[in-house]
Length: 86
Image (cartoon, rainbow, N blue to C red; front, side):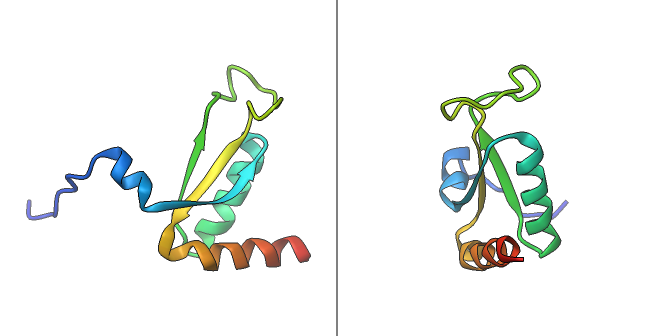
């Protein structure tokens, strides 16, 4: 196999991503993620609480951050803003 191996530490990979949206539950996060991916923008979801164990949001506990690559951040923001205006 001649594929290029990624030797970056997970923290280094995370630094290539930038937060574009905060969702208050897994359903909202998945909708936003699907919307961005349908426009060719890869996303990561990052949260502190597993929603299936604690299916509630309170004081930021259910917050899920949606991260996109830094190079895609401006386009993702515009897409999300235009989607909210419709």
